[in-house]
Image 1 (cartoon, rainbow, N blue to C red):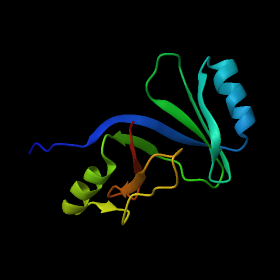
Image 2: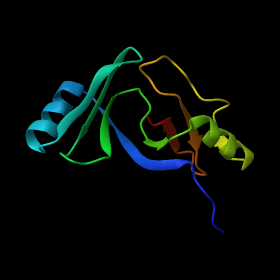
Image 3: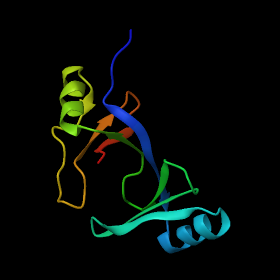
Length: 121
């Protein structure tokens, strides 16, 4: 059965790191990635790195913060409503924390893995 999707791309894969500074040094210095984002986020830093020209980034997530895959959707509210209507295990509503952070919500697959849908600009 074919279904439409509101998801537009795999944007970020989060990996847990014990030291963000050392992780950046490794990914940039050893792997040749570039820093795409380094911004305050939730009391810490959101650091995204990627190979030059790549569209998918790797988030260097500090210990204790949730890791996972972040997907984008042009309209998070429409994606949220559609997934809820299908019975998908999703957050009660999209989170909106401020103008610098796009709206987002998490869904869980049958194995309990979190996927976060983030509104693309």
